[in-house]
Image 1 (cartoon, one colour):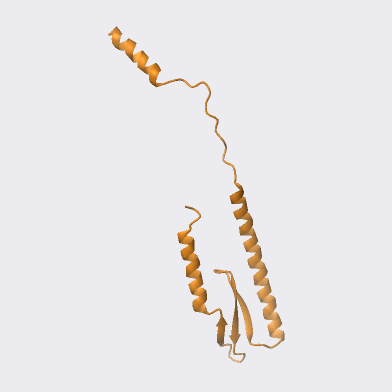
Image 2: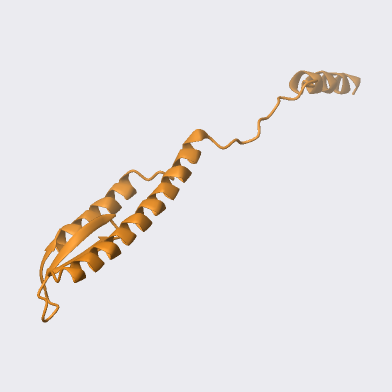
Length: 120
C-alpha cells in the first residue's frame, strides 16, 4: 500500500501545478463604437423633431397661401412626403412618394435590418 500512496502523491503534484500569480482580468469598457451609436441615435431624434417642426411650419405657410399642398413626415422610413389635395373635399389627388413606394421602402428597411442585424 505504500507504493500506491507514493504514486498518488506524485500524480497530484504533476497534474495540478500551483500558480503563484493569478492572471489579471480587465473590466469591460465602453468602446468608441457604442458611443458613436448613442450619438447617432440622439442626432436622429433631433433630426426627426426638426423635420416634424418644419412640416408643421410648411403646412401653416401653405394654408396662408391657400394652396392644395400639405406636407407630412413618415417616422418609419424617415421621409417627408407631399399630398396634393382637392381643397373643397379634402380628397388626396396625388401623393409624393406614393403610399406603395413608402410601404416598399419600409419593408426593405426591415429586411435590411434582419439581414444585417447589429445585435448578432
